Length: 275
Length: 221
Image (cartoon, rainbow over all chains, first blue to last red):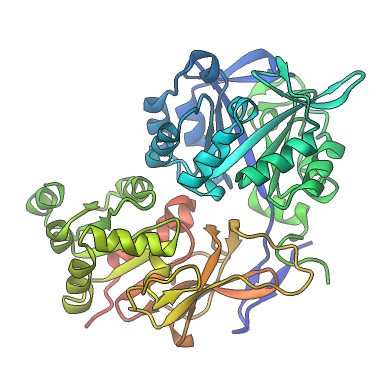
């Protein structure tokens, strides 16, 4: 469904559609794609990949350095090269522990700071960074794993450690701490391309007022739409779907055409709720 | 100094991007580098005077931006170069908002170059629209203008803001967008003074086209 609105001057324009965000995982300056946070497969050079995504006019791009926390350092020089070629909003996560690091990331040309393990271990850091950079630049990525007897739990340190908080409780605490946006990632669905954990996403989206980005499991545009429609997410993110092609998962960067996304999402529900 | 060197070597029109510690000027310079259009940081009276046209960026809070401009002694050079010497200026995001008289977000007076005030979003009852307005919006060309005429059909731009500029004079509206059931201003122009609410430097080919148009814009006397 193509939807157009008309301004008060009588000029037609296209309606809002939700953001679709590729997520790239970097380790030791190279890109990998994981399955359930393991089995990392090499998928290319980050600078090259970002250049290709730039050419495809993606809505936004997220880069997560999955080795940074363990290494205890942020690869500012690589990030600088990446930002120089990226004319879209950029988010970076991995190893950020101080406001000064956050400030450097923004100065390089990234719009959003993404906290993961740091937010789980030290929720005060969310407030410190939000106070410095603004809530809209402060995103937290919540990695959720479903445990056999304990239900959904928040994990951190590459899903090795677990918080006692329920995901929705943690999400509320992060909102109160100043987070401007949450990425909700299903560890169980990561790289499986079996669809999002819609129940989890909806539970968190219902618990907070800030935007929720769905991540983990997407394989098709229909999955992206389900995250927004049934999952009530504000935006849909994916890794494998944008870097693998076909049943044998050949590495090929792709991104849906804007027209396809507009038709599939059928006009936004955020800007103009059904009347 | 960078600007002096560029002028000396090129003689091209040079765009000065005001650096007052507010906002991401690296992305704007990167985009002009990609376009092969000379642009450089302008951080003091001298570099502002050397530029042929100016971009005023900004993110964050209204009062903070005005206070920074004054603390760095940049307001007077801006007035001199924009109002007296009539150099074209483009405000981006908060840099557009401070062109107005003032804002509901703060108490400081704005530059007052575009008559109007900056207001908090108010939505229709029952709207699910969030604040900040964060993401891509399609914008409508409200009036023909050299800054936007070359944009393709259904241009879309990346927005990130919690307040919006409401110009007193409707004829100053150039671009509008819909959000939460209302129509808001995405771009303004009054003579040689213009501003956009979105981030062209983060809006791919649409933003690149707008920044290119600004580099060629000749608003006349």
